[in-house]
Length: 629
Image (cartoon, rainbow, N blue to C red; front, side, top):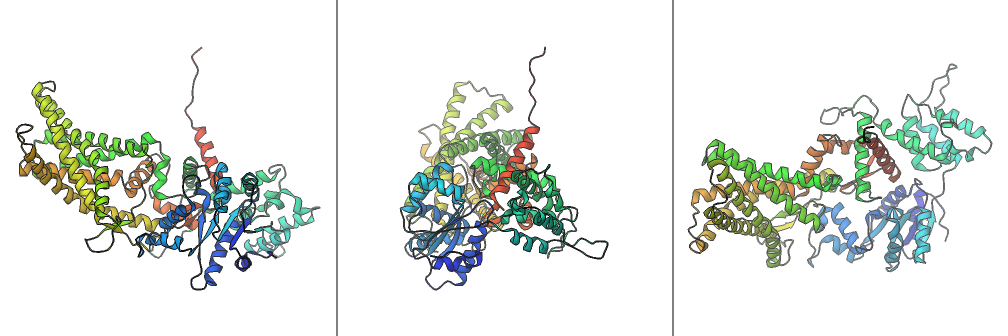
């Protein structure tokens, strides 16, 4: 078939492919991602009823050895389109129903960004299905995968994006540039002298600059640096001593992009009458470099910059420390607040009680967090659920009993550990404040009994509450949350609602559960006292402190707040207004939005920023000195 044409005809070309499978090849920056966007828009415009809906997926994050293609597509749909978490008639999510009904046309962008050792496996998996799809890749990486797999993408047509010609360059750049006044009254564009010199040279298209400016990416970078900046002259790109080859020119254009888009200019007043904030280019580049380096640490070619995973750029020890500190503060503040209201202890003892209980809570929550990381829960995904009354629709758990038991069993150990820690803190507090010896036989016996009883009270109370909440959970319809900021706001509102529900439920569960458990064990373990006032005090402390500690330690929004809004800005690796900074970078064209995540404008820009950040950090590495002579 004749597949020649331009970006505007790609949808028409695709409709001539009987299998519905198309491979688009091109070198870095040749416009493959732009082609996918144009293709999707054209397909949607010409779409007939019951046709497949084209959806762009950045395939670089797919591990074909760990996740089936169908499951990965469903996961991406749920992440980028949260309203698809709603249930279809058969009980599955809408995303699952759409994929299983073959109503989604996957546009898989960036095959070359899959880890090198997984590309041939990915190709084999794609060949095991006849699913219509569009796949983009760099030519060399795709050819290597084909050779290793022993077959191309079967039943697929292929096309390749060719380089832009010198005539394309000459027809485009002058129209983007500001005029430069001359003494004779003329006003040629700043690119005219450069293009004239390239044209005058023998075989001008073979010069390094002409070869570099043969891809849309580099032309965009050059336009941004020289056409839009009044103090830059593109004639410097012809300096053969400064830029002897293509690589030096490309690195120069990549290095100048961020400082150019962040240059100082008169800020426009927004609809809210607030002027756009000026950001220092050097700081902006360092913050963007940290984010690019964070993606490299997650996975060498990871592109999805998800707000709930930014904190993963910190070392595990730092993350565990943040959990311990935030949990300790939550419980300590809860102890002090409850004591201010009820005043059952002297001020000094109340302060000491808050410190000891907070330390225990920090240790307990830190240990639970470490266990979750150990078993593979390295990131806390945004919640896509809300609480609903019984009979208000199908919950997340299609089997309420199984859902309750699963959540109860997961929470019970953590609550038991918290109760044991509280009993230990109580014994330590009595020794420190009243001088009661810890080694006394009666004290040891009483402490062990308190550990068991408080462990059962806290464990069963927390298990019952979180189990009941799991049964009452239902998909959250967040149709407007298909952007990073929208999903963040939705998740924040969900966590706040959970806190408002969990605090009174957990307070009552501990207070009432403590009365029942001590009544059952009274006499078996000796005389146990659990009066109403004391039970409510302990319940209020556990409900308020425990719920807030849970919200900050085990929800996506909580980890974002502690790490990305406090910890990383304190160390200078991110700005204090992180949300506004990311949105500003998107508006300036450094980042782009893909559903609920950001991505750098191009993988080459991401790699350049990450490399520059690492080089900058190495300059300030601690010096090491040998032994004195």
